[in-house]
Image (tube, rainbow, N blue to C red; front, side, top):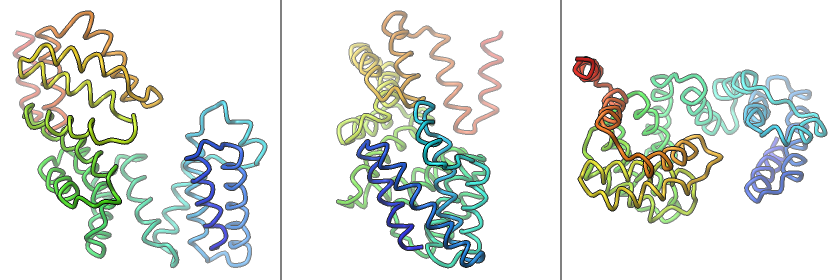
Length: 290
């Protein structure tokens, strides 16, 4: 089982380095070792979690790498992966905390069971209160369930920790805190945190959508020159990510057409909706229809 873990982390390292073939080969070795564990002891539930992580993750492999899946004989099955991770989280003994964290993420990302994810993450934080990754994931679940005040508290705790080994987590927390203020219509505060993210991040991921929302903030604050500048920068994110691809498309539209009164109203309606202010959304839409 531990040797399987070694190959798992080697696979992650190869993937991060862009070495696709070696990443798949290490994945194959890891899964084979986990399968050997289960053959020796079908009740060694942690090994199911190791397989589950790969089966779920491989379902997101781009089509151009299907040859590697075929060559390695690996399975890519989201539902089976979730089931295995859940089994490891509930019944496993080794790495139980890791599998509970993965389960909390999938309850959020795959099923949108935000309340279940929040309960599980709060359980983990009751034992590991200084774990910034658990707290960051909890903030995401709070944002998705429109519990913005609770998300704000978690994100400020992460940022104020100033942990030297979690600089990117802190940077992303600035981005999310910008979203919290943006959804609450506090554009000056949102602007500060978006700019903090854009000046501290070590990756282009989400810089497109952050620049787009920065542009919106400047627009609402009547700074048209900076609005146009960041509308232009919104095209420079990671277009492999849906949010950044959308920002790229909007960049072209904003630079060509600007923002009409109805566009502004739609931005505010979306913010109110995402903040859980549903009555206000209905009232605004009805006023527009009038």
